[in-house]
Length: 232
Length: 208
Image (tube, rainbow over all chains, first blue to last red; front, side, top):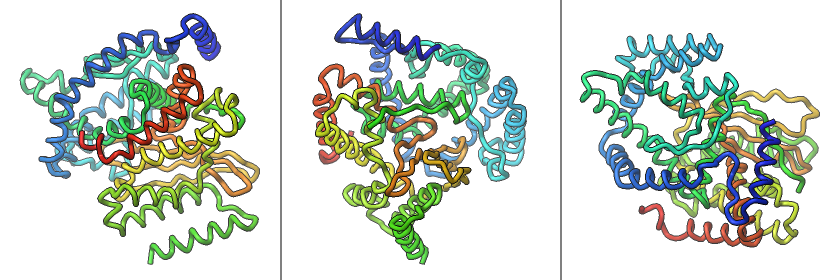
């Protein structure tokens, strides 16, 4: 039914306004593009340079430990989401990962669980809502967080509320840890963002579509229904 | 020795394609990926990201296994049928160039990747399959790369690649549709030309 709606909306869009036919998935495109530009400016001025410096200064093993440490802290909540989606074995795996990595991996800086064959998962509340049947809702570019949708924004509110890093007290420690996590993540994404620059004709559209495809794939745990191609 | 074996396997593979039996799609993907990895492993220029050499490597080793026209049709979507044969040819050339230029810069990282080639369950009559390769990485869910392959008289050809669920081909559809809507198919061709020229310009964007 959503497909038919999409086609209808596209037809209306094309008929309604000749120059800026809006994408039915993106009714707030005007605002979104503005926020995208703001995020980009902040990224270029602040996050990207800091991430580059971090990558230049911190050796690979250290960066690995930082990445592992924050990754480990995510696993309990990933487990909760797997449980909420009825994937009990996966959820159990996530909690086992957290236990092993915290104890034997020295507070998570070594990912011993992966070496044992306990694979990391990727879950959050947005995906859980999707699994429960919620559609994406409108595409939404959030300040700082970037690409999202109405559904994923709802999920993000819960993700943040349950996040052990930003909730950590005393506040200054929590803030320092959050900053370190941001830098670590941005550094890991440097290659991807360069690829985005090179691959796209319109970065906004390219990133939006990639985000929507990615989330769809995550909700279906990697096997969403296929797209067809027109005859040649 | 390993390189020799890979080379021999590839030779045999192409030999096989000449005869009746084509290399099965999963073996084809594995052979090509390992071959490229082995080549990068013994070439310092490729490791340091020598662009011209990397592009040549992709063109020689990977491109012959892609259905370029099919990929372009998939990216252009509904407007493909409206394109003239000459336009289709130009679109295909420019889109191929864009993909090769874009992914050339990622190829150096191929060297220290660990691949987990997933066995393909297919029936003998299948003509359209998806080959999965998982790229293992530290502290993150493995990245799944999927190659959509179809059987052609010239062997199995890839017509779409999905990385972590993102189709590198379909992701262009909206961008292309917007350009066709604004300035027609020729406009799309012109935009692709401009983009490709900017990617070839000496490191203008890389220095940023």
